[in-house]
Amino acid sequence: MSRPSLRTVLVASLAASVLLATGCASGTTPSSSESPAADEGYVTPGKLTIATGETAYFPYVIDDDPASGEGFEAAVAYAVADELGFAHDDVEWVRTSFESAIAPGPKSFDFNIQQYTITDERKQAVDFSSPYYSASQAVVAIEGGAADGVTDLAGLKDLTLGAMTGSTSATTLEEAVQPTTAPQLYASNEDAVAALKANQIDAIVLDLPTAYYATGVYIENSFIVGELPAAGVPDEWGLLLAKDSPLTERVTAAVDALREDGTLAEITDEWLGSGQGVTLLQ
Image (tube, rainbow, N blue to C red):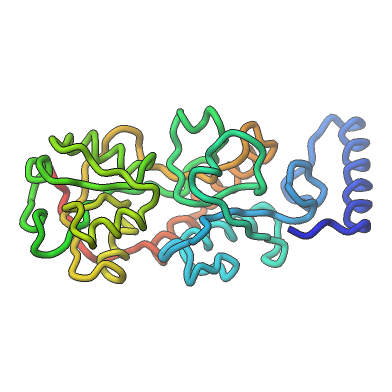
C-alpha cells in the first residue's frame, strides 16, 4: 500500500478540523454525501481499502482480478464503494487468507469480502455488515462413485464426506447429515477438491454457487448430488471489518441501501443466477 502524500495528509487534517468545528457549533454529524476523505476510520485517507482471498475464484471474482469489478463479490464491493462515495479509482485491493482475516487484531483493510458467514462466535473478534447474500450448501461428487444415485440424507450418512474446516459447509455437513463416518476437514476448498479427485473422500460440501462452478468447470465428471437443508447458523454473508470499526455502521447502511433499491438482487442474478434445478435432500 502506498504511503499518503504530504498534500493528502494536510488536506485530510484541514477537513477534519473544519468538520470538528462545525460539529461543535451545530451538534450534527457529517452527512453521508460529504467526501469520504473527510471521514475518520479508513486505512488510507481518501481511499477505500478492500480485501479478498489470496486467490479469488469465479463466480466471486473473474480471473482473480477484483479491480475489474467482474464477478459477484467484486461487483458488490464496487457497489458498496459507490454508495460510500468512492470513485472506482479510489478503491485499493489487498489480499488475506480466510483464517487470518477473522482472527482478532488490527486489519490492513477497511472491509473484507470473502464469503464470510456471519456468526456470533466470529463477532467476538470482528464486526460484520448486514448480509449481502444468503447461501445454501450442496453436495458434490464424482460420477460413478459412492455418492452416485444418492437421493436423500440417509444415503449420505455412511459416506466419507469432506469440507473446509471452520466453514458453514462443515457445520451444515455435521448437523444436517450427521454422518456415521467422521468428515474429513481441509484447510481450503482446493484441498477438499483435490481429495475428492484422488478418491480419498466420496463427496464434498460447498456453497451452492461454488458447487455450480465446480461441477461445470474444474471437477471433471462431477455432479451436484443435492442441496442440504439449512442447519446451524443461517449462511448469511457479511462484509467483515475490524472489531468495533468506526466504519461498521456506514458500511452496513450502504449494504442496506443496495438491498432496498434492488442493486444486490441485480448483481446476484447476473453472477449467481442459474436455471439448473437442484434437489433438496431430505
